[in-house]
Each structure stands twice: as structure tokens, then as C-alpha cells.
Figure 1 (cartoon, rainbow, N blue to C red):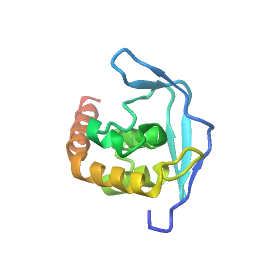
Figure 2 (cartoon, rainbow, N blue to C red):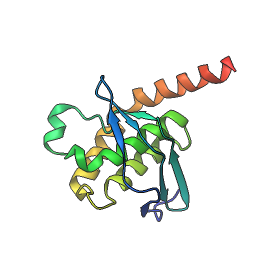
Figure 3 (cartoon, rainbow, N blue to C red):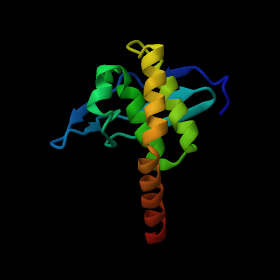
Figure 4 (cartoon, rainbow, N blue to C red):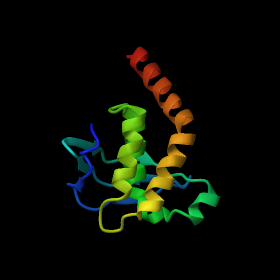
Length: 136
């Protein structure tokens, strides 16, 4: 993926979820987006915490505007389809796209927070993925 892949196109229609008792969300139908030349699919029943930002940062970033980006990002971290850097960049580009997109400041601030804090989530997902592969 290169820097010219700036456009995000929602292929499958709007995000549809149900809230689970722990506060996370389960997708009710598959979600597909196209980022540049890459198509990303999040299957129905995938569980996401959307964009889990610390409470202080929720003052600066309207979380409702980055929900779609959070679901895509959670899926990319779970699958390892892209590198961590690419996945984080896709979060920013997705956050800046669509009808209810985040503004430029919100998208870049969210991206910076992800770059600084999501390394642990990435490492945990990679470890879980390795464990699942060895059990098969």
C-alpha cells in the first residue's frame, strides 16, 4: 500500500451491529471496504470494541465518527492481513472517509494515539494467531 491509496469506499453499506453485555459490538452482517486497490472484508459475527480510546481523548475525538475505522482496524489486527503500520494508516484513512467522517485533526490525533499505544494489542493478536495456527 502506498500513499496514493487515499480513498476508502464502503462496498457493503452501513455498519450494523448489536451491543454485547461487555460493551463490545457484534457485526450483524459482513462489512466490506476498498482502500486503494485493497479490499477488506469483516465477516458477520466479528466482535469489535470500535475505536477504544482513553476517556480523555474522547473529548477531542468524536468516537461515533470513527466507529467504522475501529471495526476495520480491529479486524486487520486480528488477521495480520497488513503490517501494523499499514493497518494504522488504514484506520486514519477510514476515519477521514464516509458521510460522518472525522475531521483532519481527529483522524491524525487518533492515528498518533494508535501508533503510540496499540503495539501491545498488535503483539497480543500476533501471539494469539500463532497459537491458533499451532493447534491446527
